Image (cartoon, rainbow, N blue to C red):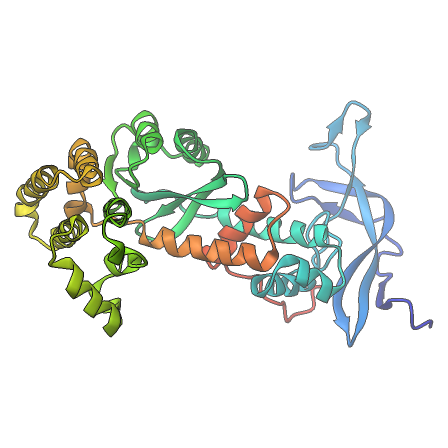
Length: 394
């Protein structure tokens, strides 16, 4: 045997005399006589460092019940137990490939297994789609929505996560109100009514708000408190930028005002103590920030009063960025206060976004958005990888 050729160690001839046998296809369970046989091969687990293939003569049948075509009865290949239909690999090889792809980028796994990357993606798509199709949607009541970058040029995918099970239910290309309509259609395809979604957590994007109102009119909206704090932090930094022209000591102090006190080193703490109690507009904005941080810890019966007082304080501060934040919060007051009932945040989505971006960097990007979405499902949901079969399937 030439060493440059792949090693084939199994050749099945058990189907040598098959024309008197009858097979039942899974699609119709009707007995079908053998029409002919066709030699097929499937890649199996490597034998040492040699590629290994399984060969078999597979019977084909002509089913008169489920395979009618204009040209007559269609000839159908009988399923084999060691491989799924239309696959060029055995179950064991696909399980091994999925384990590789769970640990490294698909391109790298393809190089290690000496397979074409397109075939590897087909394996991954098959098992991810199979796992996601079995997800139970009957108990979905509370979801969180957020977008993450899919590639350069302001291209995004939007993720819908079940807050209770912490599972990514649906991912779609784009962002905004159209993604909510896509999620509603996805639920309808699963036989679920949009009315079963009772709570939605999102940021203050007008597109998300409009999409929820149109597609899930019965759902209560909770604005993510981390996005609210992001608005306040951005306003504090805007005040600092405008003031540092007259007060050079504020230069290079951005993160002193934005970080929590327990994350500052001694030098930063000393600088903050020296600046925050002075007659600086940035110091006033910083005190407003500390006050809104305490808002999330007050008892819910006092939350409405506390927020109203804070918005009045921010308006009277006459700091344009803080005044604008107060106006925004006044417009969405009910959805901000809803947090004290739902306790929903997008913190889980932020961690999933981190996983997505890390996978994207390792893979140096993905050729299309479908590949990225499949990788999101596999990594974020920790999908069960097919196990290597230990029994002989032939």
